[in-house]
Amino acid sequence: MSKGAPVLDVYAAVRDASGHPLVVVNVLLPADRHELEDAYPLG
Image (cartoon, rainbow, N blue to C red):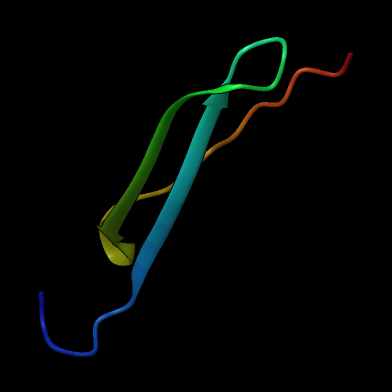
């Protein structure tokens, strides 16, 4: 990656039904090489 290249800073937390965190992840991805898609259940 070149200096000054755009990045995607992704922070994700997975929680159980009571709201307690199970996994927390922070990832930096080269923005010109990735596309993100999210899905959220409606309850």
